[in-house]
Length: 66
Image (cartoon, rainbow, N blue to C red; front, side, top):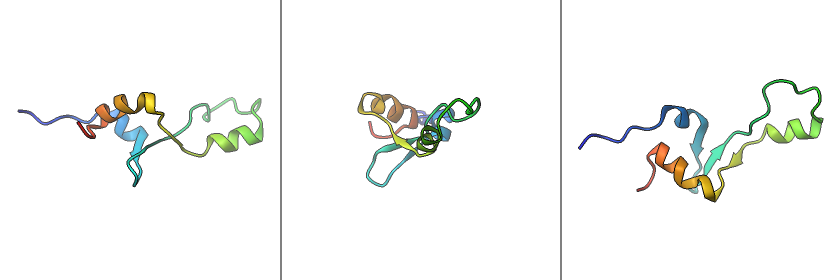
C-alpha cells in the first residue's frame, strides 16, 4: 500500500498542540484594516482552535489518527 500524503496547504496553516487540539490562524488580518477597530485587529492576531465540527476534515488532511 502507498503512504498517505499530507495536504500541503493544510500543513502550512494548521499546527498540533500538546493536548492534541489543532491550532489555526484567524482570517481578515491582511489588508483594508483602517475600518477595523484596534481591539478587533489585536484579537485577530491571536491563534484560535479548530472547531469540533471541522476537526475530522482537518485531521484527514493532516493524516492524524484514523
